[in-house]
Length: 120
Image 1: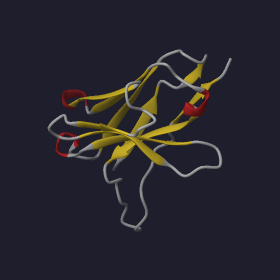
Image 2: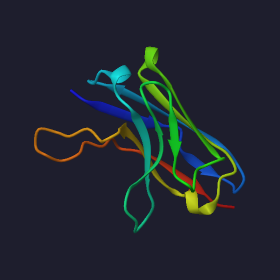
Image 3: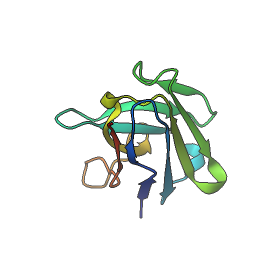
């Protein structure tokens, strides 16, 4: 059974830092590109960072220079280090494969996510 469990969110002041983590199970983690996605209130979910099987990384323009994605295949875990946080980074953050895991019902699987709130 597939499970993605995100953690590490919280309330942080503008300019602060957070590190998110996500443990995956039920997939062959090392064979998948992994991504961090986020969904802000009233907006569509977007991919903000991606790391390939070969450790190549890509970032949304909004995340470049501030966010760093990494992975530990031995722990089936993907991380997102977020620095210089802005209010517009406020969102629920999810990890998933890229493209997202598809269930047998034809919809994407998502974990519960972790809420990041950037506010003074």
